[in-house]
Image (tube, rainbow, N blue to C red; front, top):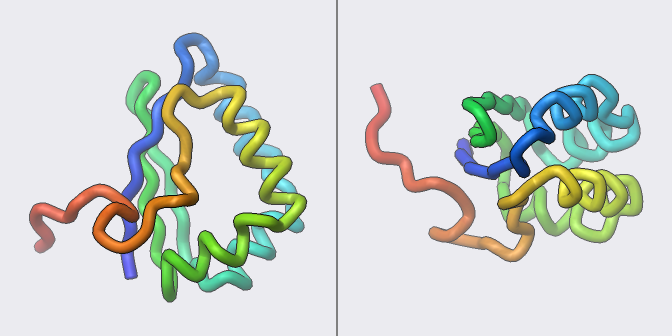
Length: 103
């Protein structure tokens, strides 16, 4: 399944966010892959971030990562940078951006 997300950075934190993503812990990327993610891309336009996740099951992904210590630490770091963060409580139709069109 594909899930698109929108998050937003605090003004002036763009470079710090990009630097953090050059240093994603190997333990976290391994856990993300083990939770069924095939690909996760992030694009930035100013403060706005757009994520595209290709995974087996998004709700399973969130459940497996939610209490994982390396992810909890990562999310705390991201929460410092983000004005609007990744919502781990969203499920079903609320899980991501609605898909409007696909070719």
